Image 1 (cartoon, one colour):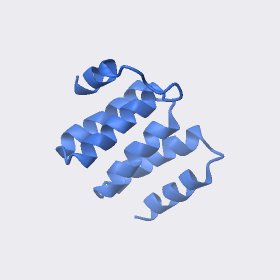
Image 2: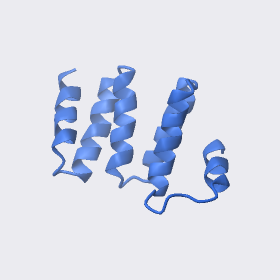
Image 3: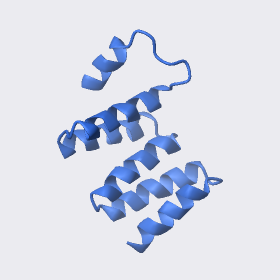
Image 4: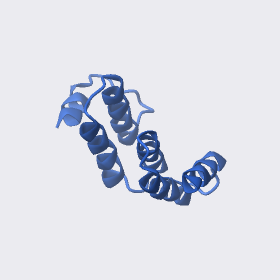
Length: 101
């Protein structure tokens, strides 16, 4: 609900900014504001549920999961991101790192 209010309140969103990017920026803002972990996870879960074909959303969720040490879940999210963007070498390296944990 907070994301939707913030999104609707933007007078002039950047023309190159997609909805998924705006949602991920909202998640980053929550992290910067030191919001509760469950709220942060809720945003990234919403991003992957709302945009299941977004490698960016899956990679962002994986980063948050890896940061808190949830390596199995991070591995799955990195695998999905890599599946969606197989030509992205960084995603493959992050997936390999998550698998080694």
